[in-house]
Length: 287
Image (cartoon, rainbow, N blue to C red):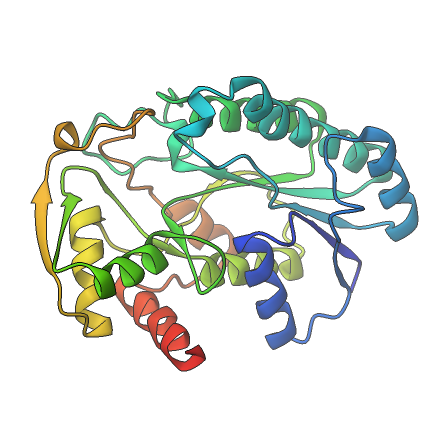
């Protein structure tokens, strides 16, 4: 199989890709150390592409601190837009295909309908805006791209909602969790497997795709599921977004329609709660 190079390998999705690649016995994949993985350094990227000659590049590098991005606009844009552009240019120059990971935050999320790839992107945060700008840069310079939007990512790795809830659940008697933001959690292991399956398929239907686990839930119900499955004894109360103001505005409804990715690549996507059980079991086993 042709070489695959992963940028942002130390992050949550990068670590999941490493685990899934090992389980699938995919050996022709390179997880770059930080010294080689700076997507803002165009000269360094040229050296990386010359050295590894990848057929595929997977961009897991991103500015994902949603609230912090509201005040750190320049760096968020540099990483999410310019970094994606730099990778796309090198992919074009070296004949590689780029897998660009994006987000449900590109949508305003003000209508209760599953969001399709052709629905209008209208971000309401700097994070969402800069990720959309990254998508647009990739599409403008590179035909061979898969832009995969995902949502509510969690896993055994890095910091995420599941690990935060489990930690808080051991220290608190009760928690208040937002109940009027609706979407779908995504187990990053499942997303990593989907990305590698798409690459292995060799299917050249490039473009934008949506991927999350199946089902619909709120952050409140997600938290309840975490505590139920982990048998954590903590009282959880639902609250409105207005009761927990944040620097960045979140979409109220960001459930994505996944028919396109399922039909194009023949993917079977697990239900969110089933994958949550797998993740929590893995976390508990590792303790």
